[in-house]
Length: 228
Length: 228
DNA sequence: CGGGATATTGACTCTTATCAATGCCCGTGG
DNA sequence: CCACGGGCATTGATAAGAGTCAATATCCCG
Image 1 (cartoon, each protein chain N blue to C red):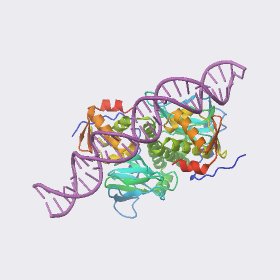
Image 2: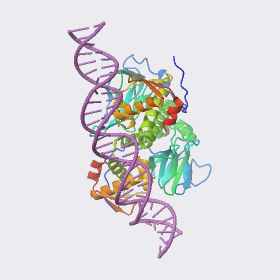
Image 3: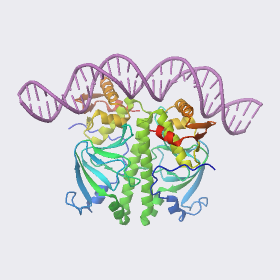
Image 4: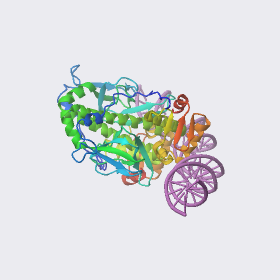
């Protein structure tokens, strides 16, 4: 429908757990013996909470998931938004150290961690895939550290839009699944600042807004230049 | 020498690659056939650079290592300091996405990634250990996202001191291996702000400075309360 | 079409950055 | 052993960027 956006960023060997698992589990909806269990969550529903026992990893089938941590006084930091195909819920210990919630209505498949590991005892490649997925997550998080620690508001918003564009593949039109408040908590800003930066980008002619949620990226080159 | 600081934070199953490897490699210094190779780096020397091909992971034997990323204009974000026992250098693709430098004179052991993986083909536990180490790194990075995105200067410095105290085990006396500039780039602040926050903490009676590099944590309770 | 949630815009404040001037170690060489 | 020099660190004055508070405006969704 629209022009394809170029994938400039290196996307290395993307291991696909789903591929590995698809042959093993029964259909997602088929019941308790299934390797992965299909689950649905309504908008803003909690998938798991910080501090809760962790026993599964999840694969997004549809919708958008946010991973976040809270401070006691309510300040929130979103560490990632996950879109279809992404996996999340990997934990270093047996408690979740962040919570996961549905930004939109969401369908996921939950895989029992222990099952993955024991399946991995035979096929080493499965554990290697898990390792690779975790390292990809680590890379993303480190990139985000640079954004939060050293970029200004405009750079953060520009980088955010490019990141969203990259994953949706709908060319240069980005459909934002989340409200301003979530974007703010992802970028370490306030929702007012997000709004002002959108206005600024609009004024500079690099984006166009269609309502609050649809953003046209008019000049990817310039947007990229502004993101750092 | 001084009282032991309590380990409040959950430190779950710490897999130890070194343990797994110790039985396999010859002594670190013993030459090319060794599984791991010992290496030394002087203060501020580069261990690897961002964008460079990645083929090894490293284990810190002595000294302190910083992992950092740069923006084109020189702004820098340090994502982690690594101390003896830590491993670093895990990469999602075959290029390093951050650089590693010696904060102090450093000794490390370098392990060839391919060797680890192929060794892991037999003993799955090795790959699992690598997975766990990566997930621990991910947890730390996510914690740091919260700090950079949502904590103020005083909270960041308080959290930093507690983190340093936790790992050095020298009780409530912390020997800072790195200059103010590095602390600033780790905490997303300027070195002047670091200095002012130290002054503030001193004024409030929760720390005492002995020269610029040695910090006495006088009130861990209060420091912890101030860190969020 | 109406109403509540979401978003924008404005005025002002506050925290941290920036720029600049000392001060303080610490190691080195006389 | 002391003096000197150079990196580091501290402190101060001011500026800038983002936050806060508050008043509309807009957009969905029923």
